[in-house]
Image (cartoon, rainbow, N blue to C red; front, side, top):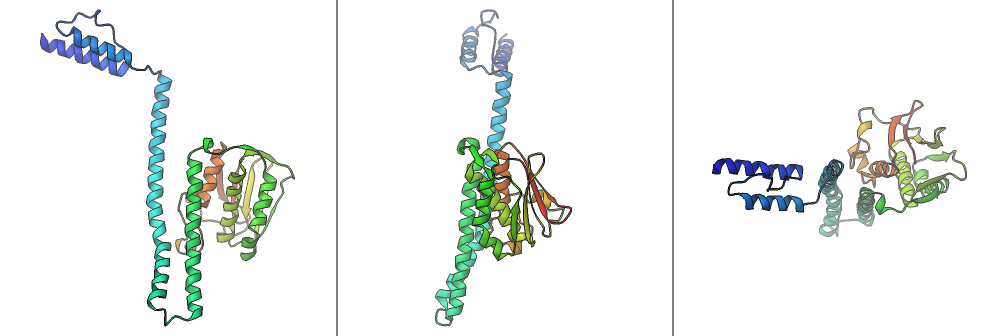
Length: 288
């Protein structure tokens, strides 16, 4: 009899935990376990009720939290790997300057210090990029959105990056009207086009950047350079991903630029695609 009552009580508890409701203990005739069943009934009724939709949302929220934690762990692991190279470069040059000071000529010392300065700049770019990514990962609530003239923003980016474009022998143009209003954030837009321009200047080996407003309202950003191998195209938005690792490390790239572009575009409720243009070069198409 006791064994049967315990089994009935187990089923009663199981029902309460999984369905969120149990019949009052008075309806079921218990033999000696009525007080325990009453405790179960009171406990179940004291818990907040969740609808099926709420339960699904809770599960989705938990999944999103796990994904964010995993993403941050991946970033930390990659960051740990990425910073070893510039730190090692700086340490190597400083050690040489300290240990062989008398043998180093002024020109050599200046060259070593210039390498240290360039490498420090890369670390600063990486730190800034990570702060931008952190804001983007926090979603729209972390960024104030308003009506912004995209044309003014692009003009400012091209003007600010003119020394970079001149250095790599590139020209940039666009066909946007004087007023093209988008609901966005000035800093967000500036980051998108700054990273796209730098990516084209550093890696395309082209001579032109063409920004076009397409008939369907999307933005086309392309260069006339060498493009990207089709095998690498799906990976270019990954954080810290580099197609030519040895070449890229000689520049101030953080390896996060296109990842910032993708996250910023997605924050507008849109998506971005990258493809090789039929006339040559790499093309990005997205909506703001």
